[in-house]
Image (tube, rainbow over all chains, first blue to last red; front, side, top):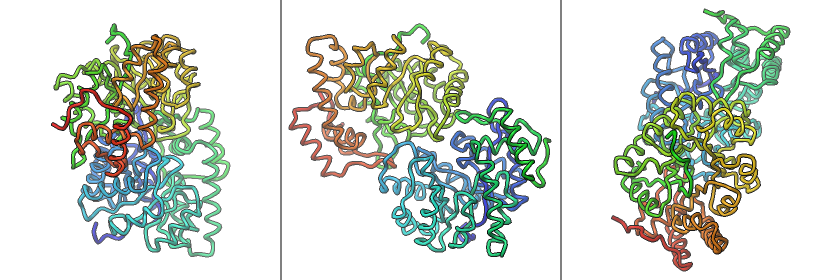
Length: 307
Length: 307
């Protein structure tokens, strides 16, 4: 990856389907990845909205291997690799780089709270040093509303300075545009991804790299078109439509709602399952959401109905 | 374990020593476990203060096996087994039960926030069902200041009702005595452990099981004596002395301070190391803490100097 272009565009934290025994349903996952790629949406597997933190390291390694075996291009993947325990983050990062993944998305260790920047710096530095591979392209994953631990601007600057190239960008899921804007202004040309598509246009207008957003799981076509046409006259109109859909789905708990939407448009109720501690929407709510989306004229073009 | 008595008394979340490469130093860990046991203090390995969440599942399995091989009694162990990912929690719990551990201490899954009681219930229920072993004695680990996810009284009641025997007790590290008291009153005879020794006497006077406290790593002798003599005339005096030592150490960040204290009394500076994201105290602070403890007449009776 040394000379590979940094990742750009629109990626989806790919939702993870489970079977009745709560095991990962890799066949359904492959089908969903193919749908996303068919709309030119990249694959941020093992993100927050993938229930990535409910999967073991062994499961993640097995899944990525099976996706690649199925012919899915690892260059389009940005798997989540940041765990609480340093050896887990190192093992995952190494594996993803060896398999040719275009990048990795790395949470800071998130169990201990009130961490110093120095402690987070050392965690990231140890991962990079121990991965020991110049092909590594790490995207920092800043999501303080969930992880409660994040990357300050000073810490980012230090990491970029010490690990230029390896520290390739960030996903800012702070939910705070002023923070994303501050990153874009302080680190021009660096790979700043909006944490959701409601600020995709703003992010692109300030020199950003794209967005990595939960809602891509269902609305990838429109979000990718917004990315492609961000300099066109109808960009604001496209942004409004994407934002409206986000809010329509986001009225419900996001991960169950995404799965319910896929279940609706594939006519496949097995898609509604989540692994504990997350809980599926009840059947009535799944129906209601499906009806609301149909009424709004929403569709998932090209999605295959139940196999 | 079906007929084994529930665990009672004083346990230490055993701090974990690391070598220069940040690998677990099992020999030093064994020595520290032996010191704790010599004072009749049980071993809550892989707790928060053990940097347990900075260890991989493989490391935890290897460590517990090596402690047992070294002759340390698993019946005195209450290893931490609660992870973000269900398969990890199941694997650890199964292993600890199979190895004969007296109990396990189980965090709820802690990455996702704003969980429903139902979601946490299903997580714990799946662990118990999948462990599938009547010898399991699970102690719930309630530490919302760190995990940000915890066990409500109603959820505890439901778990005790549905898994009587298996759900054997709780460590309440809420830092809120009114919460511990509410548990003691609502679940009489159940295994409620104080999360630190400053409320050990109150906990015993309300029918509790003991305490599991970070400070046991250095002050086990006095805390165990307080537990043994809680009904004696000098109990309040003992409590005050234990509390004072806790506050003396707790002026500093707790985990680095515990390691610095052990480093001081074993004359072994390697003990000061932590695994990122946690950071050791600087040398001057280590010296200052040691001097303060000496000046206060504190000692670690029977601790062996550097091997």
